[in-house]
Image (tube, rainbow, N blue to C red):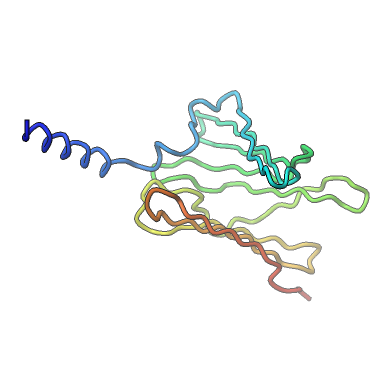
Length: 163
């Protein structure tokens, strides 16, 4: 009986030691027809978001269309699924102009690691945008596996006015 417990513990340790976080990412094979995720903010419903995820298994692409609580699209994000993780290949923001029309803002990816299957090192993705040739915005998201949870640090800032 004692050996059965030891063998069971050993098998459990080996099983979890070999686990990849890939198994816990979005279920790519289930998203070919698209699926909407609702991220609800109960304390402030106006901050609720909807993400429509669609996967293209042939090309290994995951597309996320993000919407505000009023269903106004604010982002389109495409990731390439690789053996090492996912990498941003397209990142478009949508901003309202003075007339209320949505205008696409094409962000230029710099760091491309959106999600890594290997959880040993921190990683990030970032993008740069020049608005009207006057302002440069840098968007950066860093991730680090810290145990049972994935710590995510988000920052967006206007860095400087260009002349």
